[in-house]
Image 1: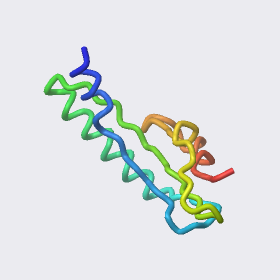
Image 2 (image 1 turned 30 degrees about the vertical axis):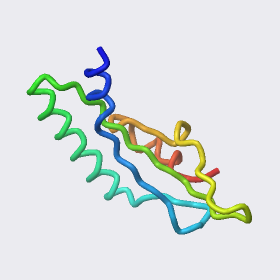
Image 3 (image 1 turned 90 degrees about the vertical axis):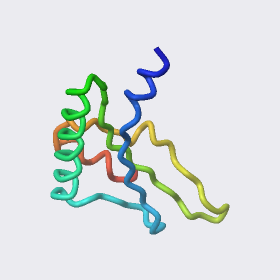
Image 4 (image 1 turned 60 degrees about the vertical axis):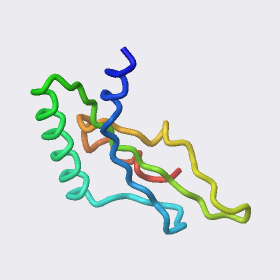
Length: 93
């Protein structure tokens, strides 16, 4: 069902690094707040029959010689149910 697929991926949290630095890592309390809100929102929507998988996506943008280069987000995505042990994913390698 295409409609259900759209709803499933509707909720996507984006945290972008636009400072041009090589490293971006949000503070742990910020991540905790975002994840708690995402869990709550997915629960509320679930009560209405809307299946939502909250995702916390981190985009890295490299301001190099050739301008803006968005890096792949697939390697920098975690679900809200992942533990804080996965936080190194936020660090640009």
